[in-house]
Image (cartoon, rainbow, N blue to C red):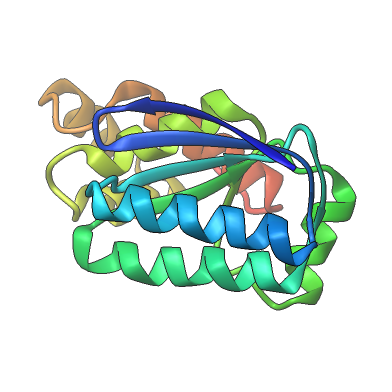
Length: 166
């Protein structure tokens, strides 16, 4: 198992190749995550495009990472997971613990939104979109308080989850 790493400031994209089920692979992942946390990296994308399997030890390591990121106001987003890996997250009961984006670009957009000052804007925008209040969304964009692409990302996310949107 090999992990490609692309780092930029306090963000990193990790793209494992192969299986994260063997003890040695999980130990490699845990060591890498610990080193990144030590360096105060707060935003992580785990790109599963070339990931073939995800074991319980790897899930535990990623869950520990997610919990370690909370006080740092950081986040972990999975992306490019095939149906089998998404099912693994669901069966393990981690659907609610981890954000999952369709691809690397969408995952980075989610992290960019999280890194934007004003943590109240995420829930406020989501509420505005889901309640059909596009005027509030437009006002926040005009004030430069949110990234205009965030609205489209949330609409796509809501549509993918079967929620109506304006």
